[in-house]
Image 1: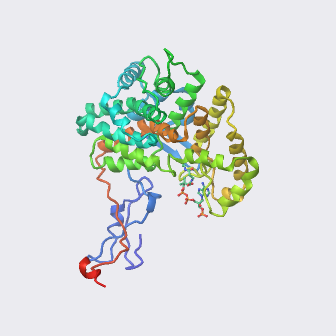
Image 2: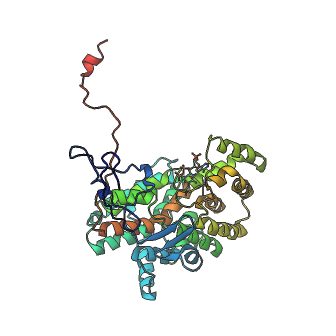
Image 3: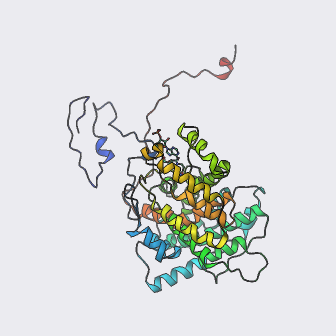
Length: 424
Ligand SMILES: CC(C)(COP(=O)(O)OP(=O)(O)OC[C@H]1O[C@@H](n2cnc3c(N)ncnc32)[C@H](O)[C@@H]1OP(=O)(O)O)[C@@H](O)C(=O)NCCC(=O)NCCS
């Protein structure tokens, strides 16, 4: 690298297609001034870690967990097995899977006080806010979780969190509906049990249609990890302070809550409802192109040709609608997609439907209110957050997250006390 300010040249090794920011820092005009830094809002071109969890090739539309293509996992695996894969780094043997399933199943109950805690929320509290707070609160129920250097202890918290997330999510939902909480049923599979806690009323045994269970399980798999996205970065950033994993994951839930991240599918449905009918699509698209608003569910920071998850979800849509009947908004969504994919504005910017474009329609077919969509995303993403957290706490190269800034404010002002400033 050549510093144009001084003409001096530096050898900066390139390793794994990256240069070390610390090496760039050695480039300086003189000893007085700080070394060169990199300005990268949103970390668009900055690697913050080494990771062996998830591989993405945005140009080619490839997504792999621990090397396995998402398409194969969605078709042949189940969410608990994928969770095992993400956390442990390899597929389980029969004995490993049975033990894992048993552990997760038997940790689905939460402390009774959690119920009281949840009841303290206002009747209209957003379930994502409840989930974030209750996952954070779990750190107080399991204070030993702060001992993050102990492998067994870490494992225990990972099991607990994957196990309890559906219970907390379902209870947040029941809270909003004013319905009694349903306790976990250990005889049901992970995803069936979740559906039971959501929808069971007076029937003795809750039975869900297998196609719906499979579709929801696939959706969980598709959301299980996505390398260094905003919420995972939040989990890692907060986790880098060596706080307990519940607090770190609560931070991830906060990040996921935002409309540009997990909240997008909720925004997609609101958008589709606002459009109302196919005739209104051209005017809506014009508004998007004029920069008045965004076409929610389109575009991705990483995928620039297609989102492989969107393809799988479209198929799941058909399966679910076979059971529930077609959602009328689907027609608008399909037409919107068709028009947008042919429009130069979207083609030029490589904007394609992402995972959220269709997932909201499926969730609605399950009769989830839009506020629940992000909660479903959070349940699916939990093993990914935990796999990344586990990797972080064992990575010797990691440090507490502390980005640099370019200071743009005033310097050295003289403070005038309020009594004097306010005299006139
Ligand atoms: C996901 C997202 C935040 C990625 O953003 P990004 O990588 O930072 O991309 P940018 O915001 O820089 O967008 C690049 C260009 O495409 C446009 N663009 C991006 N997404 C757009 C969308 N959904 N609708 C309309 N225009 C969009 C931007 O206006 C920008 O245009 P410009 O070059 O004329 O200024 C963005 O595409 C978005 O807001 N999508 C809608 C929300 C969504 O579906 N999120 C879920 C992600 S899984």
